[in-house]
Image (cartoon, rainbow, N blue to C red; front, side):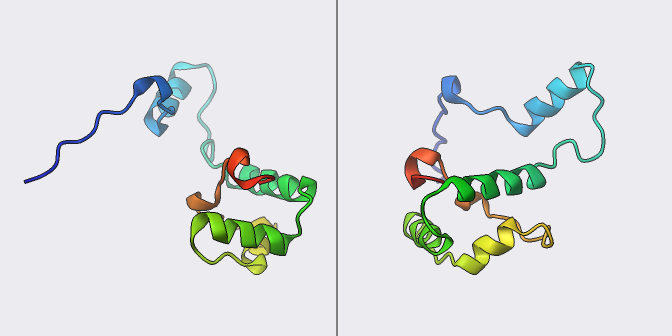
Length: 104
């Protein structure tokens, strides 16, 4: 028998993709191709965070490995931040809260 689903606290609910699309359609903004593509913005933000972090990329990889419980290497971080490798994207698990990772 299936377990009943837990109800989510709607006061802390993050806007869903469908909510965002609905708001976009209702606003005067034109929904152009690529409107929801945030990969480049995320890459630039990651680069900026790494520049401002006092840790080396090797140390950042070590901290991420520890927090995620999965191996993260400097090479992986380099590929996520390289403009020449747009297909290499940071996994959702790697997008950490600044409070948890220290400088990321």
